[in-house]
Amino acid sequence: MTRRFEGDKILVATHNAGKLEEMEQLFAPFGVSVVGAAALDLPEPEETEDTFIGNARIKAIAAVKATGLPALADDSGIQVDGLDGAPGVYTADWAETPQGRDFVMAMTRTHDELLAKNAPQPWTARFCSTLVLAWPDGHEEIFEGTAEGTLVWPMRGKLGHGYDPMFQPIGHDRTFAEMSHDEKNAISHRADSFKKLIAGCFG
Image 1: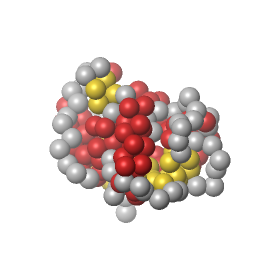
Image 2: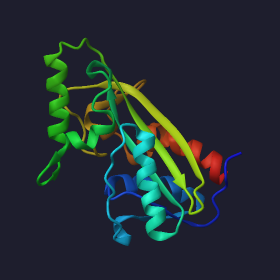
Image 3: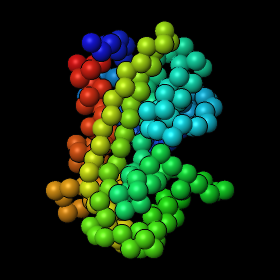
Image 4: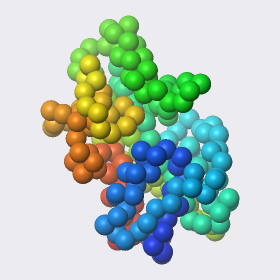
């Protein structure tokens, strides 16, 4: 039996504005407002695990300890089959530059590495999202979601964030970056994990 979340505000342990906006839109129908870690000046903990669950737990537990509030953390990334699942938990790392994250650079690297390996097309891939909801008493709930698709080149679309311009979900002829927020939020990896979270803790 999963624990029900009581309250109308949730702390989301992310400094990623795009991810926070997505969470705000997902929670809105349930009357739950969202506050991000950056708004509370929380430091970004170092993500030292090699799994999505491990890194989401680090972020959620750090936020709980810093605030005494229940906190929700997401760790997500893209797994490319032709690259043996890379970049996976290192998706954001592939985009790191001294000036901030550059996902065009990361997508270009992904494309170049697929070509270098002569990876057969279609280039199948999946977005993964792991949500960890942690309480101050140490209780945790974990929910995992995925979105299957293929990688396209050149990149298409101006909406979304991260690898969205390169990812075309199965059954669709547009990339995530060519879809509206509502369209993407209906089928994304985060929508999948979020539906499980809502059913488990808010339903």
